[in-house]
Length: 337
Ligand code: 8DG
Ligand code: CA
Ligand code: CA
Image (tube, rainbow, N blue to C red; front, top):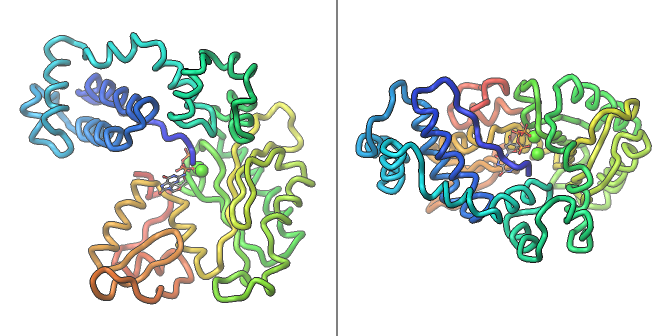
């Protein structure tokens, strides 16, 4: 998964409050490893970011969704003193800054970052000298640290898509290839490239023997030959995580590439899921539940009795999913929430 960055909220009368909440959120995610608090601070920042007027007190803020007593107290402290002791203390502690830096390396989570700091690592240079402490994934994350932090312009993904599709076509004309994620939502820049592949003969109902000439490994080898894929982080039967770069241009950065091979009968649920945004998915799943369906990256199933899912609905396009749960279809570019 990409490292999720806090959404920036600009041109709002509570910008300074949003900023400190998002800083606290990042600290909770990267250093404390507390996803619950991370989400709580992000939600509060979202609420304040959407307000048309300046918040005057914690008490007033407490009436808004996602703002409880503790955040209200922090808002009061900030409004009265212009700063937050908790945040000042966090910034004073140099270990926290190092943990945040190390956790930006692909494959290094907060726990590993802490462990490295405890082992005396203070900089990326230190880390380069102690690569024995790193997994294969983390070593690649370190090697491509600068490149992986760079956003990928849409035009570059368009070029990568061409090479990808033409290469895979050589294996079989019947493969279906879709780049999902922010690219499919029409964004001008993306953090990584999320590819979904299926084949009409590759379904959840057909026995392995018949699927044998459909293989992710063969696809990856083909793209290595085309010099698009440069490194493999991990490769399983249905999921590849790795690195790619436009073959004709050695000045282009290396990019994170994920490829998933999914069953044909589950392809459109997967496309919906991996197109996102993650918040859009959350809302859609919640709506499905209200209509007594469960939706995930594999299937849409009616909940029969006592929350027990029944047979999956037959789905041949994304529109089917919207229709079944009674929502008007939304174009990918309108799913950027
Ligand atoms: P970006 O890469 O340009 O930063 O944005 P993205 O394409 O929207 O994000 P992503 O992290 O690459 O995830 C791709 C899609 O996968 C996302 O849009 C929705 C879906 N997804 C969720 N939850 C999660 C999650 O926790 N991790 C990941 N990796 N993907 C998720 O709905
Ligand atoms: Ca991704
Ligand atoms: Ca992505």
